[in-house]
Amino acid sequence: MDLGLTGRVAVVTGAAHGIGAAAARGLAEAGAWVVLTDVLDAEGTALTDELLKAGSQATYLHLDVADEQQWRGVVEAAVERFGRLDILVNNAGIGTTPDVESDTLAGWNRLISINQTGVWLGMKAVIPSMRAAGGGSIVNISSIFGAVGGFGASIAYHASKGAVRLMTKSAAIRYAMEGIRVNSVHPGFIDTPMISETKGTDVEEAILADTPMGRLGRPDEVGAVIVFLVSDAASYMTGSEVYVDGGWTAR
Ligand code: NAD
Image (cartoon, rainbow, N blue to C red; front, side):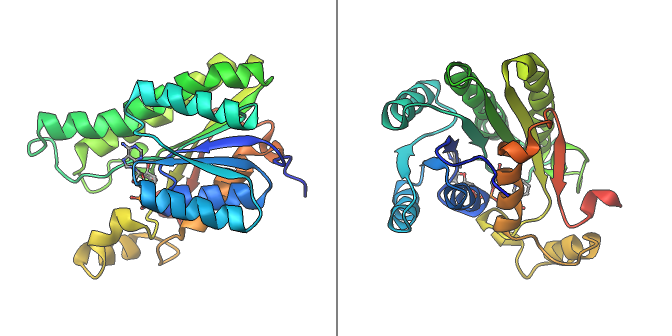
């Protein structure tokens, strides 16, 4: 099946490792020209070199998603390099565990600036270029924790991921008639550095016990869904929330 991604230009945030890296790889394999961005420049550049060696079109740019000025620079550089911009994967994110009483204002503000404000800034930065290209597709990475209360902790994380879910729907409605689709992806527990601290602990045991498929997800299993959603195969999907969680939210 032709996904219609050949020559489409995609910006992926948080692409140095984990789910963002898997999305960048999947998009490159599907023929897209990929602008990988992250704050981890060495890792992001190494992955970009790997994609270039495999014959893909790719470039790496430093981007802290909480910085509006840097977003402007990335969009300008992407359009200058590849001539257009069609796809944004708003993936960069951090996780913290404090609950309502134990979180600090500084901790809250830092997480919200990356996971929530960063997603808004990304959409705001790319939409004019997508409009100029005649349309586009945005995937915002939320979480199962954007829909349910999880373990009763991680208050800022839940706030940010719930916001991503509804910013996605608001933007989907706003831009539906301009050919710009906006969907959210909600991973369950995926085997990336974000959850490495749970390895071998009671928390991991609880996660696996609550996951009907009985295992963690792999980054490429989320990457494949992102590639599908940004492709023409999902041309009638906008405002959708897609769960990639081994059945966790089905319970
Ligand atoms: P990860 O830690 O492997 O990757 C996150 C990436 O984001 C890293 O490369 C990191 O450098 C980058 N990043 C962090 N702060 C940034 C900033 N300010 N600007 C730009 N980049 C920044 O984690 P992951 O598991 O691949 O997470 C990717 C996304 O998936 C996140 O939004 C996360 O919340 C979400 N998610 C992950 C899981 C999971 O179980 N791993 C579950 C649900 C949702």
